[in-house]
Image 1 (spheres, rainbow, N blue to C red):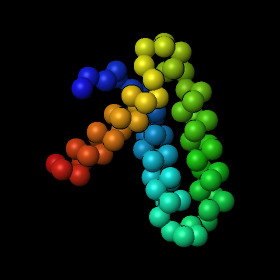
Image 2: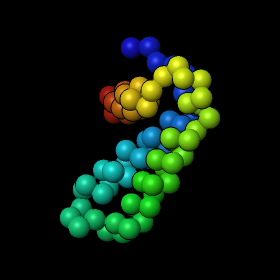
Image 3: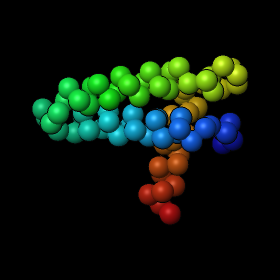
Image 4: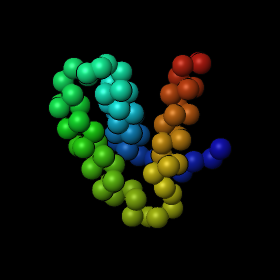
Amino acid sequence: MTYPCFPDDLLLAQRGLNRTYAALAGAMPPLNSTALRRRVLRLTIHIAYHPFWTNGATTWGELRRRVREIEEQERVG
């Protein structure tokens, strides 16, 4: 699939968000859950209000799919 060219900081923020959600879901109860929830909020705000979205050419869903694809390629190759 062809994706738009996302800025590196946006890709890194989405990867961080994915990992933070995984950390929250992994341990019961998660260690430092308050810090993890705050990190989720910070990353979500960074992603949602990033200037990249002003062009209207793509969606957050495409960003999430692109990041998952990159992570899968890193695992395989």
